[in-house]
Amino acid sequence: MAILSPSPLTADDTTRPARTVHPGRAGVAAWVTEVAALTKPDRIHWCTGDASEWDLLTGQLVADGSLVRLDPGLRPNSFLARSDPRDVARVEERTFICSVDPDDAGPTNNWREPSAMKAELTDLFDGAMRGRTMYVVPFSMGPIGSPLAKLGVQITDSPYAVISMQIMTRMGTAALDEIGPDTEWVPALHSVGYPLVDASGIARADVPWPSNATKFISHFPETREIWSYGSGYGGNSLLGKKCFALRIASVLARDEGWLAEHMLLVKVTSPEGVSHNLAAAFPSACGKTNFAMMRPTIPGWKVETIGDDIAWLRPDAEGRLRAINPERGFFGVAPGTGDSTNPVAVATIWGNTVFTNVALTDDGDVWWEGLTDEAPEHLTDWRGDSWTPDSATPAAHPNSRFTAPADQCATIADEWDSPEGVVIDAIVFGGRRSTNIPLVAESIDWAHGVYMGATMSSEQTAAAEGTVGELRHDPFAMLPFCGYNMADYWAHWLEVGEQLGDRAPRIFQVNWFRKGADGSYLWPGFGENSRVVEWIARRLEDEVAALQTPAGRIPFEKDFSLEGIDLGPRDWQQLFEVDPISWLHESDLTTEHFARFGDRVPRQLLSHLSLLRWDLASRL
Ligand code: SAT
Ligand code: MN
Image 1 (tube, rainbow, N blue to C red):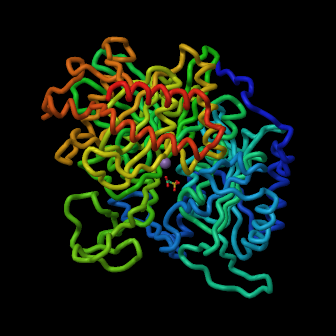
Image 2 (image 1 turned 180 degrees about the horizontal axis):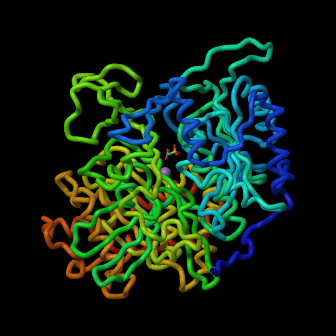
Image 3 (image 1 turned 120 degrees about the vertical axis):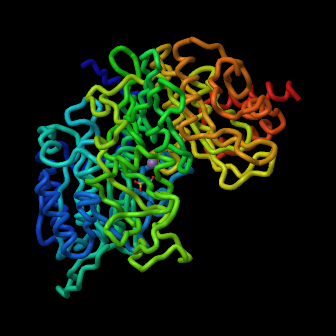
């Protein structure tokens, strides 16, 4: 296996605060002792990650009323958790990047001074685990032993977080065994902030979903530490996911010359048997999971899943970009996942799945809006209340989730857990845009691709016809997940591209959501998106030419498979139209977007913007 560890591109250790948590196995032991002295749990449990531990913890959670065991005949080894209604999602306004210099967090992150944040958190963590078990969860992001993997240890007082980490990561003894005398690992400290005994020894009863009104999801990029307090939900408590694999990993990646991205990974195979691997970033609610599990409608094409949320990409010894999915499970949004939208996901969660905040059927299975066309006559909703189709509120919370092992996915690619990862041939950026952005466009070069990523945006609501609606920029779909200054992150992308040179993957932009003059969607989406994937693959094979426009290189209609869908010539024209007035208006918004980052915006992006304006103005 030949994986290059490139020389650091921007490492500058001079201003970094010293690590207080030390590398290696001895560092783990010392940190566990230190955290136990602070949080004062009754017991410490070192997680092994084996099946008996799963049975023990799920059994305890069922016995104390924190989990409902689903009917084993319908959904074997599967459970339902109902969270506190005040703890149902990531809390972006309570998420902090605690870099020494506030400019290193940048304008898109909340910032706190690291030592002040540590002091405040230390007070909160003092005694936070009284009366509870403290779990030590060693984990590997990426296949155990992969040169692209990274190790972490989560300490948590939430057994729900433990079983979720067991699905989502390679967790337990195998991960701990990877930590040698000098191995770097990321400490990730978590408490729900609900001690069962107070400082004066007075006990209180537990609740099914303990949490605290005070929440902090804090990241210390220089010392590579995570401290999360007060929430038991999703990305707030499964610290391997967004906290480590994106926010901290993006900083590691900057310093070590690779990329930690909010991207799905798929392997696409043509009828001729030629395969390409794609990494794709989409803001939320743009069909990312559906893309990761796409069922092509065009004959002979195959799309296989490698990852649905996060990709780590690193130049290899041959100078190509290789990627792994650092996770080993899916933490998917349940509502809207059904046989008509994503049959692969529905099949994946047949068993061994933890559901959170979905509805319970009377026969002990789960349901949510969109699972079937018709709702059952009676359900228990996500709050635990009786529900019928006449009820005024949804049965499942809109952010209700399934947590399921990736290897249960019928379309999982053989390479999904290969330690050396897969070579990436194309990177795709998406968004929800009723105007301007074509169905598909290829970037002119890497820098233009970075411009496409940096200006990615989605519309909140339907835009007025023919104009640009209210755009929310979500660069690279990393807005809440980049652990450092977003403009520095763009510069890092440009540097990685320079390093890859002509071995760099090609970059494309897609938009399934463009609307016609009559306000209706022009493109059918879902499995029909395989037609776009086909064109991308044909471009990678240099089989088809493309037409250069200010939006990038777009397909010629003759090269694009349209057989079997109802798309008129006018629709095609509207899907790819580049209206100079609307584009000039959008470039004004891009100017405002870039202005937020002051003089840290890379020169190449600014010069692309000026050239674009020039080109558009000449078309008026
Ligand atoms: O809760 S998670 O951060 O894991 C999922 C999400 O909000 O995207
Ligand atoms: Mn995500």
